[in-house]
Amino acid sequence: MEFRQAQSADYPRVIAVINEWWGGRPMADMLPKLFFDHFGDTSYVVDHDGELAAFLIGFVSQSQPDEAYVHFVGVNPAHRQAGLAQAMYQRFFANVQARGCRVVRCVTSPVNKTSIAFHTRIGFEIDAGDALVDGVAVTSNYDGRGHDRVRFTYHLAGGGSAS
Ligand SMILES: CC(C)(COP(=O)(O)OP(=O)(O)OC[C@H]1O[C@@H](n2cnc3c(N)ncnc32)[C@H](O)[C@@H]1OP(=O)(O)O)[C@@H](O)C(=O)NCCC(=O)NCCS
Image (cartoon, rainbow, N blue to C red):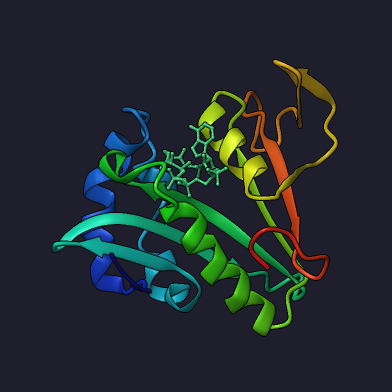
């Protein structure tokens, strides 16, 4: 597995597989090329035998400089449960901590049970919400009407599995 920072040229490879990797959900429109053009040095791509194995798209918050945010993390179904996503997060945590961040945030849809299990497992806490879905706290209408989200926080300074 070859880990490296993302580049603009990676965009077509990622966008070609993203909907399939998300089980057919239409995700491509939520990941425009600007993330590869402007956040490549805090984003990662993993290649395996010339094929895309995984990617993580994240950045340091311009409005909250001590916070970082992960917008997308995806692993090729053929390479899941092998530690790839956690390994990308470890690189991201170290990267943004060196840039002065103390907190990493991300959100996911309440239907994405895999994402909830994964993020909880690697040390993210679920933020308080205003409703419960299958016992998980969610924030109603967080991304607009009808778009509830589970919000996660990881404290870099406090340690954890990947700090
Ligand atoms: C979520 C996802 C990124 C996890 O990637 P991965 O490389 O398989 O995860 P890892 O192997 O690094 O797993 C890290 C830990 O999370 C756990 N985990 C991963 N997937 C899990 C699942 N489906 N259910 C329960 N636990 C899971 C692993 O067991 C591991 O814990 P361990 O150290 O105790 O063994 C991957 O399943 C994926 O790409 N899903 C589709 C896209 C998506 O939903 N992305 C997240 C929202 S942006």
